[in-house]
Image 1 (cartoon, one colour):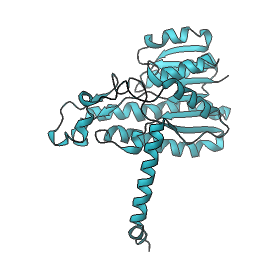
Image 2: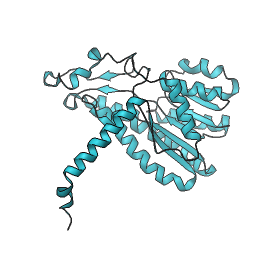
Image 3: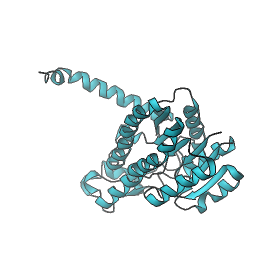
Length: 274
């Protein structure tokens, strides 16, 4: 029996993952900024579920969640950093405070949770850290520069973390979902307050008032939850798990384009050697 600590469980992928973990008989520390949103889910599974309030930008709450997970279940076996939200803005439009808040939640919050659970994992010489990124980190759509940057930072850190933890019996992986039927493109999505007209045909097309994707995304959160569990429990968990055929297709196109560009500029790149 594993103990999972999952952030951002009020809706979407986080909630689907919490439900699936509990249905399997594992323990789960289910967190959300508004604990009332997850109390019913935790209560339905008796002693296996623990609902806690968690704003991942609040150091005191992170410490409390880590402490309670240890007291109740003996520690955290799997940390899933799922809490996050999107921000749409042309780079020039981005409000500094909005951008700082975005990074505090999507990147620095995840780092703080990792640091909170790693001492226990290192002591037990086992554990898994799952950092939920986005295919946006790969395709970098116009209007999502800051979000792509935050998720790229998360992925870069995860890659180094994986190498640091492998000798200790702990794994780390990033997850890149495509479009899923969650609140990401609805309630959770934020954007710059004042658009700049010159970006109407690029970033402007992806503002909330013009976005028709919400509710039509191809991904099923329940299936994504099962895929994450399968990857975590595999003998060799992947460094990067793509979720959805749209993510697979987009990832492949980016790789092909990058390789073609690398080959086109190969001679110039190689010319800089001493």
